[in-house]
Length: 447
Image 1 (cartoon, rainbow, N blue to C red):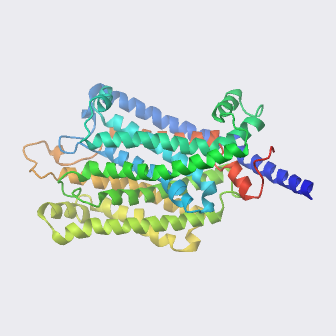
Image 2 (image 1 turned 90 degrees about the horizontal axis):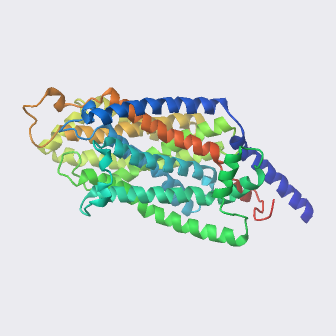
Image 3 (image 1 turned 135 degrees about the horizontal axis):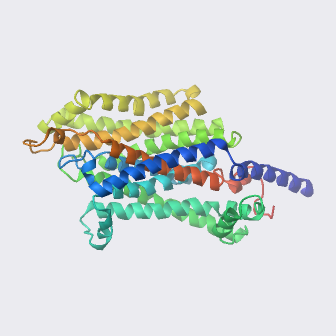
């Protein structure tokens, strides 16, 4: 009986290994087309950035008044999406939800890619990027910008560890089974990154303990990164930013944006790599419910953001709210609230909408709405300064991003997607060892 059981386990393991390693070994034309498209967008962005470096930030629509534009809005967006790694792996994982097994690695790939781009977009926004080192050499502890740089760097480090460490058993499997089936450089990469993993009980014990520590540690770090980002705005007296709830408001909004990004990635990875047996309708249903939960929390903070100043209606708050509700930015505001929050909540309450394709569309709506929401947070407030805007060119009183800004921003977003695409092709997006363990396979044996 024991021999038959071992044979059954071996057959199950071989099936799992073959299915989950197929994307690593197979060349897909759709993937190649995606990479070419992304590289084209990145090349256009680099070309535009060359002109920005040569001519300065004057090629953008930013002025003395609107000194933050879609670059900083994109920075807040990138940081927001990056928090999904903490939401899925730490918050949901630590409470014992096993359904996240095929989703967690996708979330960590997204988290790492987008937090890296958060750092890049800050450099893009600098008029003198050659002075970047001054942030570290001549920092002031009183500056929220220094806090932001610190927590972003820390989050990149922890996200990298949370992506690579749980992958050690898979890297050991790939090192042992893919030699000769993949290019030599790729096998050498797996060999190096596996760190000599052989799958002993002691190694698994150390791995589980280390991961638990990291998952606990990343929660305050992730909360800090978006809280500090919110403080960049909230520590001012400007109408629209002068709020004590900006910390949790940003964090809850980050969970919504991140959930949307994961839903989109799940759909295309599942469809493109043929992983319907591993990323199932059940997992989409669970992610849909999680999306509705975090969106409801975010809806509460949205109501609080506008209800309190609207009730008191101070002069500057009144001007700001008028601009959002019925003024220049009203169309963007109401479309964002409708398609980026309210409609996804309503649709997500119905089970038939918590299927892969509808959830992919809902996730895309959330991501697009999340980006425009950050524009709404940043730009209208800067246009309405406390001091009257007078005796200045007309374009100082409004902000319409130039083609240069849009091209560079699209290029940075494309770079984040490119990183996710490369990671999802280099490594199995669904953990082999955890999936095998859930199927009853004793992965600690030499299979």
